[in-house]
Image (cartoon, rainbow, N blue to C red; front, side, top):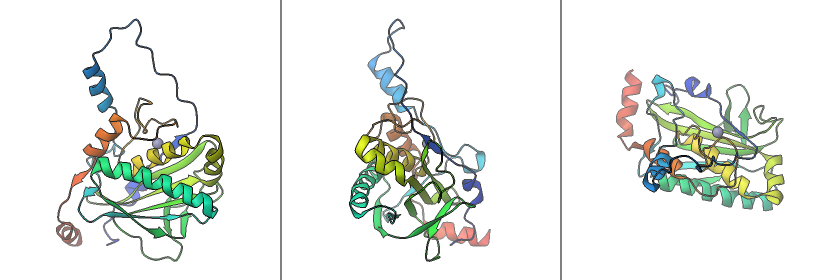
Length: 250
Ligand SMILES: [Zn+2]
């Protein structure tokens, strides 16, 4: 199944989440007050696509009955920290699943290695990359070159079958996770929601009322734009075997 997957095009897209304080929302005082309905509509439209270029436009995961699976490498976390972060990841993935309609299933912990050349996570045992699968891991800045400065998480879709996303990955900086557990744990849920949103095809939002806003806040649920984007970028389930047959003969 590896042949034909568009890896290079997706690998070129790198996304970072910046630690910082969200600017206060602009005051509406003095301007014409928009109606409540207009505000709600504008909020729902506040999302963007991860897939900006024509070749990838309209791409997304397929909402097939068979779940997308995910595995995680928590080998750098203590058992207690791993248990906490697992619960947060389950919550974050559950929300994206709920609003996108893509069922998700955890398949277990798994040692993974981040490849700083291809910007991908792969199984440490060199087993073949899984499809309809998301790899997640927690690492130090030295292990993942992109997790430096104020970047604490990186995520993206990693392979496509035609315009169907069939794999994704997210990495989080271990030191930041451990620190925020005591300083502001809501940052962690917000961080996971944000990075997983990239895997679900969303780019950045313009309003801090959405988790896809590029500065980390304390949101623990998806905002209106995030939810609309999750719906918009999910594809109907089409017959996978037909897609595969087309690829083989292409
Ligand atoms: Zn981002």
